[in-house]
Image 1 (cartoon, rainbow, N blue to C red):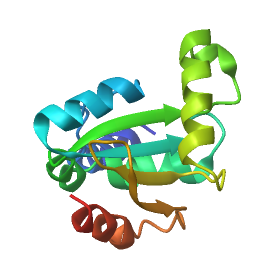
Image 2: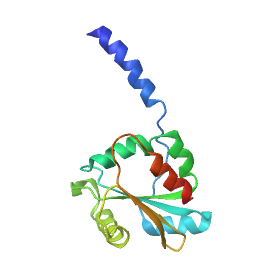
Image 3: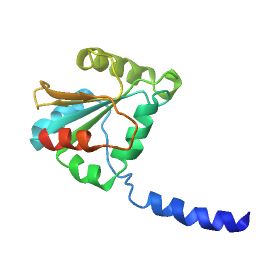
Image 4: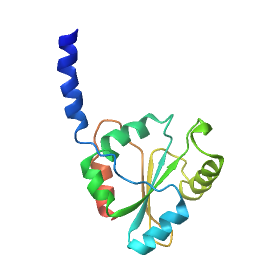
Length: 147
């Protein structure tokens, strides 16, 4: 058993080496729009159900935790809108804010959803869903197209 652990641990650590956790996601719409104006960048809004949406959880691992996304993220102001089933994960104020933005920008009500806004808050493009196959080419194409 100890031998098996020594074989699996290095593989696990190697698999984790290409992930990044230093990406800063804003959680306030107005703050994101203000940064967008100051930095002359589009806003990337990510709608997720962090505690219940399997495609959202896998997209985090397969896309958002990669070095490739870390580089692309520098071209955007990032806004994270979480709609968890467990409301205790958010403050009441954050919950209400996220619901308001969800109703305004995610009219299809789908998860995961990526939406790109300009500095005035106008929607430029959107991309929804994730096939959970590890294939993120379409997401990367979307991000490269809208930076």
